[in-house]
Amino acid sequence: MAHYRMNRPFGRGLLALAMLGGAALWAGATEEHDAMTARIEAQMQVPDRHRFDAPRDSARKPAETFRFLGVREGMTALDVGAYAGYTTEMLAAAVGPTGKVYSHNRERVLTHFADGYYQRTMDERLANGRLPNVVLHLREYDALGLEGTVDVAFLGNLLHDFYHRDGRELALAFLASIHAALKPGGVLGVADHVGVPGANNKRLHRIDPRIARALIEEAGFVIEAESDLYANPQDDHTLLVYNDAIYLRTDRFLFRARKPF
Image 1 (cartoon, helix red, strand yellow):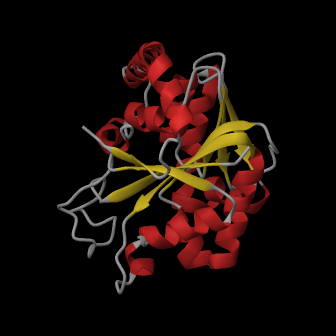
Image 2 (image 1 turned 30 degrees about the vertical axis):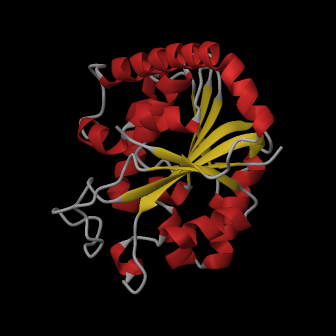
């Protein structure tokens, strides 16, 4: 079972309220999570699912991830840097038919990377209204638009590239763009491969969680919890994340950050 740590303790008043209404709230939240999990599991079984998706289920843990982030039916979600769209499809199931998912990509990713693999895969996902609650959102990372309309955003395994490839200031600009897209009180989930101080994390495609935390907070978010859902103590942080010995099994952090009200 995954564990997570809250970064801010309850005040006495909040604790009293939680105790008074806790049973009812817990029951409602559990029922809603069970319904979300059922939708995700059903989507995992559809006959036209992309053939490369299933091997990612155990690594991505979508139901547990979205529960940690507080995803609920009817929300508007943003998959930042969707690439082939695994998380987009799982989010589409999580928010249900009354919700909406913006599947974001840079146009160059779809048309120029991996010999057009990402374009073909996204075309297949969205063909013939297959995911009717998904909108393809082609924008640059620092100009996402959608100001104040998104309930929850997810940034998976990309912050290391923003920081090492594009530099600290552009990384902050990208995070600020997500911040602007979120509603007040909206949530950003950030996952990435753990890097350790002194390693060549740029080459390994990893990032020190302390650097990630500092960037997220400087962009205006409050990190309210972190989870060990993706932790792997067998990863010694020395291998490139695409190495066959560790691919899809890297040690990763997961933060839940909130845009203040």
